Amino acid sequence: MHTFWNDIQRPIIALAPMADVTDPAFRRIIANKGAPDVFWTEFVSADGLYHTRELQKLPDSKNPLMLDMVFDVSEHPIVLQIFSSNPDTIAYASRLAVERGFDGVDINMGCPDRSVEKQGAGAALMKDSVRARELIRAAKHAVGDNIPVSVKTRIGYNKNELSTWLPEILAEEPALVTVHARTRKEMSAVPARWEHVREAVSIRDSLHSPTLILGNGDVLNVAEAHERVKETGADGVMIGRGIFGDPWLFSETTPTHSERMLTLAEHCRLFEDLCAHKSFAVMKKHFKAYVRDFDGAAELRATLMEANNATEVAHIIEEHLKQV
Image 1 (cartoon, rainbow, N blue to C red):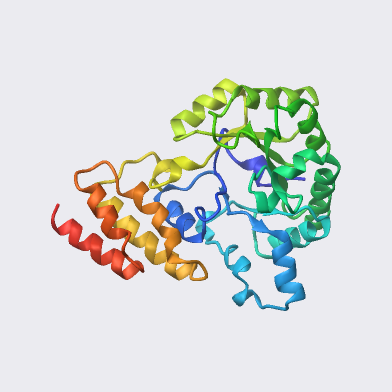
Image 2 (cartoon, rainbow, N blue to C red):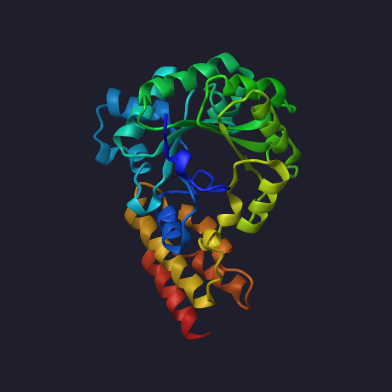
């Protein structure tokens, strides 16, 4: 099966999926400032998609989960990440990915969120390789030759289990596996151990698998990503936290102070336009990331935290820029 993964440049530098971060608004900003090689969406509940659309008969325009799946042409190639422990709903969501024009679908098998794990999804799948393989097969059968299926996971649940866990995943021949270089138990409490990404590559190669391997964990910029590729032999790197407050990251350009502040205002406006189903308070986590490293940053952040909408943010920034 020939997919966009066959044509994309190496090394692949991708945007990591992050809940309440890589939403349609932020992705649009990133695409305008310098896109990664591949976008990932926030993860979406396959069960939620099915029950809301099929069982409750709620139209797409009123389904908040469908609104999380909105994307712009500037974001291609873009991968929809989904989670579930139910092969039927994984298949349903995968068909939706094809229907909605995504370039790929990715199954989350690494999220440590307790509510996700209680469903037997996310990181819990590392303890149930039989079910994990069923999910990959269900997604691949659902999408056929239309789009590729990939997996994002960790090196293990309580300890490094790549030697047993990764071969199970590779046996189902996903197009790509992203390996977050920590266990579920470790969360983000310890530095990512990139030697295990190198181990994942070695396992892949020993099995003569065509699956691509991306590494993930603590990479803050493109230069560091290239170094990690050299160290590990991975096909690319997924960058997450480094994108906070820096939508110019993938273009490796440095904005002026004015550009940074005006981009924050634009980000807020797009959030209201594209993410109206979410609380504006979600945007406030971005304020600290954008507003830093200059005299008066703390005072400006404090003022912005009192803003209730994009209009108020734009006014505060306008007044700030008059004084600098």
